[in-house]
Image (tube, rainbow, N blue to C red; front, side, top):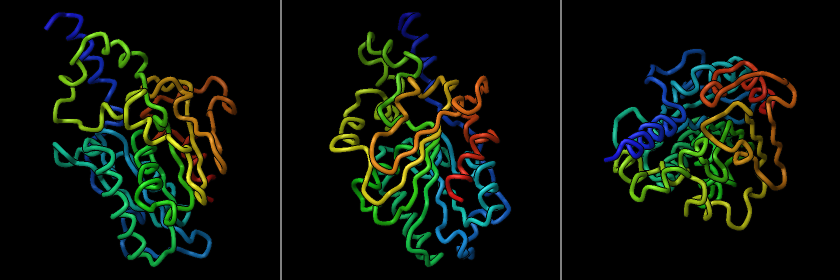
Length: 264
């Protein structure tokens, strides 16, 4: 393998780890509490979908307790563990979406709620869209709040485009360890299928939160949705000069404020 190809693979591996976080115990403060019952003020439980190479408790170590403190019942599954236990999001997105839907059903049964709200980060901001479109999720989700979702595929700051110059490089990188990785790249078959016929589903509200200093899901415009009941928020439009990176969106107080306000 030549030096340039090795460099591309190394950079791609780093770029694909959108939300790599250590596995942790379930957050405290009312999160993942199956005895939680939604209140009149917050009648829908929140199900949080983590990013690629992430896990529910770690990815939402900040967001989940913040929502619980506002009175929400919050659940943080780890989906799509295809290769390494505890490391999620690596299965084909279609499989993860089906698994996510089964988890939503479990939450609805336990809480006796009619619908859930969903918060997703990175891959978790696009995977539920497949659930909404193809697995009946639109009838069970009221509001979908997504942080830096690669809705139209990512170039990973050009790394993905560069890798195309070396046939087989991407396949060599991901192999069987990450079935979803190539699905998240711009112009993938998955991205085209997901967006065909419209980007949103009737009856579901959408909030998309992005940062111009996100250098992993690129260009930033790839995250923005078009359709009814959509609000696209660019953090720097209201907070000029603020630096919030891709992973930081799940932990930054400004982005967390947007999430809690959207679900208030």
